[in-house]
Length: 64
Length: 176
Image (cartoon, rainbow over all chains, first blue to last red; front, side):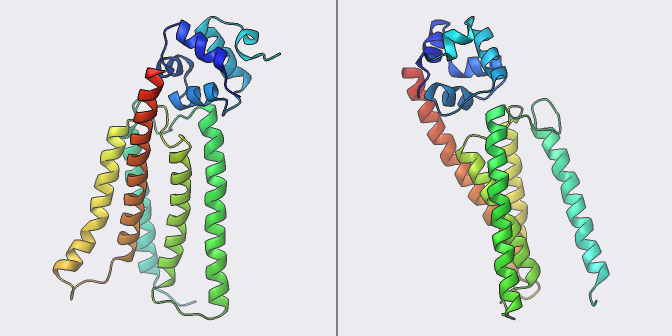
């Protein structure tokens, strides 16, 4: 399932996938895979992304 | 056990020298001048799968050779060439899987430098073939070099195609 919350949070910060990837220390393709819902990240990567986008884990990764 | 220990030792030394040169080239080709290539967590997972498939490939290849050898089949080329082809088949599976799943390039790789090294390695392996074409009487057919060259060309083509696909995907992503 696509992670549209992550994509919109990244867009709101005016960051490209490549820029977010560099901040989080991963490849651009990994961010792309996350947004497409093709990869389930570890909690460490979730936290790194949340810190980079100033969001909480709930805001980006919780799907009620 | 019959055999030429000097010939085998010569090959072993050659492989060792090749590995040392490869290690130096990796350090040169990495952005941070480190020997270890860094991958992110998704890439490490993909590479784990790739190594598994490469292992299966080599095992299946060797099993086929084992069965054929047990049946006393004869091959048109020496056994060491067939074993080498099996290793290359494993390398091809590993590289191909990593390339298509975006886990070939590490975070600290300089792709341009790696590309240059790949091209030089391909050309060096093509040299014996050129010398064979120029003086066919003086040399044996360089199977090892030709197989290595074919493998490098295959990896290079895969990398180029994937690069083009990625460029298009990136452009589409920027527009979205």
